[in-house]
Length: 433
Image 1 (tube, helix red, strand yellow):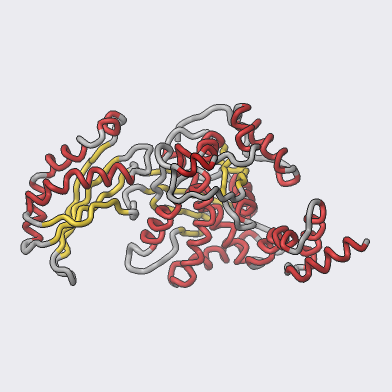
Image 2: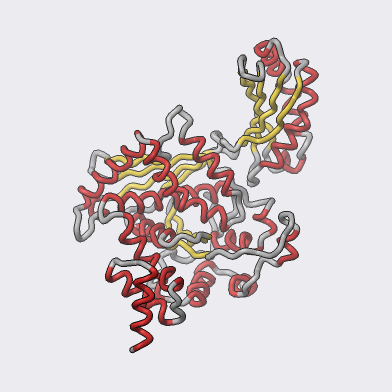
């Protein structure tokens, strides 16, 4: 990760007890944001309808979701305050709490591979698919040169088409198929437009080489060459609670992860918990969360069995070691990342200068969120903490306003009976008093 300046500690003491305006001022001060940035978040409607109208079709307005920040994160010895856009209660709190536990154990170690994306060029109408493969490979240099002629800016930044692969599907219901992959270094872009353009450009050349017909020319969202990795190591002391020893919790988390590894029904929910952390970071920065989801779940089944994306193990010293490696095709240039004012602001809060750094942040938050879910499931159950935080939503649904929200929420959480009907009863009692 590249060094950055102007960032204070991500350990935001008493942050939850502040008002939203006070929290924002604290974040702005800690991250060294300008007065213009501070005003941007504080003013409703940062995404103007005129801007939105240029982003998608048939625009009728804009839709808001809560944006919060995850605190306490340390990655490779550096602190980050991480914007997250999400509607589900407990996500931001859980990630922040697990980051605080990890912080005392050295934080997260992260790394990332090169930003390589794949573009697929599908060939049909071939009687000699294996022969066609060799024809394509024999002209590899020319194909790469033609692809790189599409984007001189990318080449100037050190990116471009690096290699090609050719996959043969000798027998399909539609006859033999040959699929050529362009392997492209997209630098700080997500890369979809770049690789799609390259695929379009080389298609006639491939047809002429093979005598086949090109059909699809499109990127693959299984970005298995563009991986982000996170690791965390936690002591027994860090993991203990009032009810459970650290050793017992560690054993239970490992056991829960083994369950996800063998059972796709459990793995689906286990991996959803990981994406609970990753998606809000992706949305906050204007990236394509559907692409990240598609790549994640395809990667989870790459060995023919849908399984856990993460691993949780116990090392020789009895410490809990969590690791997560998965595709992370994110960008900090182009698309909504450049057009949405709050996506740009999110990048300034993060104080990052590369897509590689954003990828590492996202995967670390995913691992933290996964740890939070497994810790809860292995001890008190998922509902206790989640419903306590969900109680604010229930209080609002029941009609609570202003100071009533906190009072009703607190009573709901204390009784572990988080229902709208119960909230309405509490509200009625408060208003009679």
